[in-house]
Image (cartoon, rainbow over all chains, first blue to last red; front, side, top):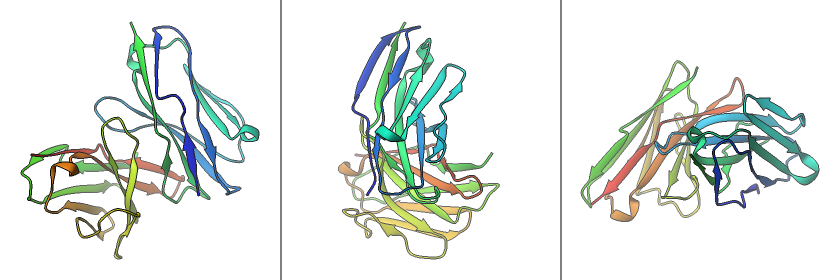
Length: 115
Length: 115
């Protein structure tokens, strides 16, 4: 069975601060995919990143960066120089095998950026 | 890119009536569609998996007679909430697998309020 844990329920930071959202996962599969999604107040899910279990390289996309560490089963997400538009709920998710199965979502972290 | 169009965006219905939610895949064929439910400030919980031309597979605890899923074509999946009650009020969102790149695309969600 897969499980995704996002221990931080809510985080508030002042604009321009950096913030890291934690994600820890459990799976027995040797091949799996990890995802991060953003859910603004409007409700739609915005895809941020997909990482497969064989690729442990960290990734940076603008102000966003991701740290994948298989040794600790973590896939953390950092926003640098946060902006008010970053305020949203962020979900980490896990898909087994070749990404053609259902996603298991974490409980989400509600991020509030204070102007 | 691959888009799933979900309608309606929001609906208010009276207790005891039925509501149909549609998800259409645009520009691609969705052989598998997932239906999720999200209660306020909670995560997305998978309700069922539908495959084109076959019966849906429901997650434990989800009443298949209450939440009717039809996936009659490769571009359309529907979820009908029958005899809706106030406790069915929730955010419902569909998702299709993108087999070419092992990703998922989500509909924009339907906010159902039963009064």
